[in-house]
Image (cartoon, rainbow, N blue to C red; front, side, top):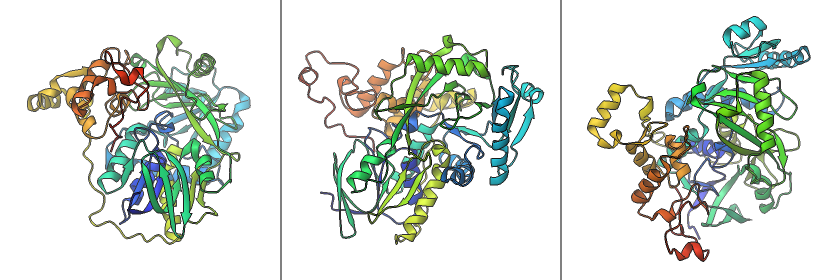
Length: 494
């Protein structure tokens, strides 16, 4: 049993859990994050569109509506503080028919009601001057300069590292199996031992309903809504300069064309209800629907340009809104139903929850010295050639290219491992190694060698994303043949 009594235990290490941890570490508190995956951000947070919505998408009068614009305004400061990829590229919501025009009116009214600046209706000529590759059949659009793109996995890593350096106990490979409450203390049984805490924040995404039931609550059902996304080759960089939305439906913002922070064009997502919250398989029907919808907006898009595909699962409540606040179980707080615009709203959600904890009696004394500084990772490919030459002269590992598609160096791989990468996906999301045109065809083996060497393990113990996602088997390895876990003893990222 863990003898430490934490002030707050956060169940879930996605972007919401990480922003909660980052906000709470500003205070003199003992905080733990319990994440079931091998790394933070490995669930829905790594598999979303990476959009900071403009503040005008969600209707006023909802938690989504109030927190979307507040959160939007906080992301710039977080980027300055932690150094992850973020850019305000703006967005166009396009009406393809006259019947779509009332939807544009609603969006401009939302912006007016919430005080979102710069949101304007553009006529067809204005739209095509700004984005000439859009369909000439469009009628009009709403322009929102406040919309941004972010690398959500980078944000999770930065938030978690800042929290960890400031004293937060971040536990990965830590699955909650049960919990009980006695007096003013929660005892949480996990796959990594027992964790005790005065307050529990349920930020478990699609598993929030199951976690609530463990706490003796049967408050809601969390539905799983899958979204498939498709990445296009970098040769299409600049196809559009803004995020292109269709007019939204009641359950989705539709299939978008997204210029990501790193330059890749992404199309998607779908919005399909699924029974299995772990169902992250892409489908032929999903691909066909996404491509057809994207072509209606940008006719030059082709399925031949797809280099990668992935899916994530949204956590959806029956009222389609967020559920944030205390429950009938003393000290247990819901942070549930955080679907789109959850990424956008996450920093505002964290501030809101800290306020609720204060109201519930949690003493919040500022942490002496403020937040610990986080060293910003070097992205070699983005540097001027003069700076690249300087780095290579100082450290020869900057002259060793591991991933040719994305120009990722051996020094960057080592840096990512030092910051907590334990899997191929951990490297990929920290460095972009394996994200390019060949999708790891050339660099996977080298990345595995560097992981094994730095971690002091065999190649057979290296996984793609933890669990049983092994990539190679050592000759005569009885662990693989007999079903024993060859990664036992590795532990999770810290």
